[in-house]
Image 1 (tube, rainbow, N blue to C red):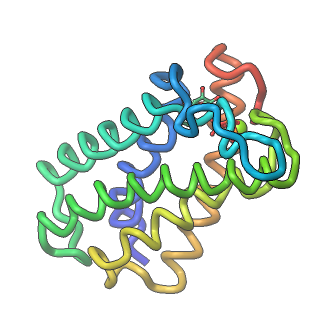
Image 2: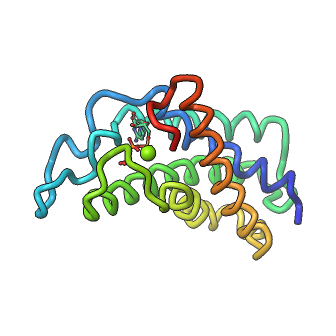
Image 3: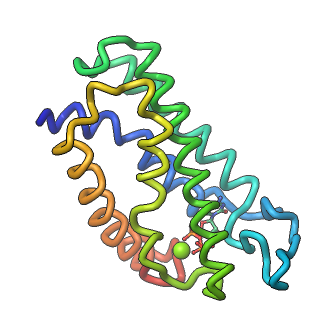
Length: 169
Ligand code: CTP
Ligand code: MG
């Protein structure tokens, strides 16, 4: 397993995941629309600004990583850049899908749910797969998911401690 390759691959995705907490807010992606069950489609926690800042931040991070490092398993700077952009998009799709599921299960926006920790990375790595298939060994994929799980819990606690998030999850 090439841990450095995996970490460089994940960096834009983690930035994309984290940035909405800082730069998000404003109009919600679902424009307040309700689903058939009377609850919000995604809820107030998923905003357009959060979505766009995530893709921008992930893309910028991917560009910086591409400038300094070529991930050997990818071996192509364009593919590596695309993995970061499309992966960041995947992070946001996973995020919205997670909220959709939470609302259908009647879990309020902001309340924790076990999928919060992993769904974003699972969807992101599915999206990024076509651009970096050689990176997807069983060990690497397992490492990506476990690391994301642990980091999600850890960073949310830190974000809560420094006052970025009201709740420690
Ligand atoms: N955020 C945002 N836009 C997004 C995602 C997140 O503005 N697309 C911001 C919101 O302020 C949100 C915070 O980041 O409250 C934390 O994100 P997250 O934990 O994903 O959302 P929750 O508020 O917990 O909502 P949900 O229960 O739907 O996950
Ligand atoms: Mg949350």
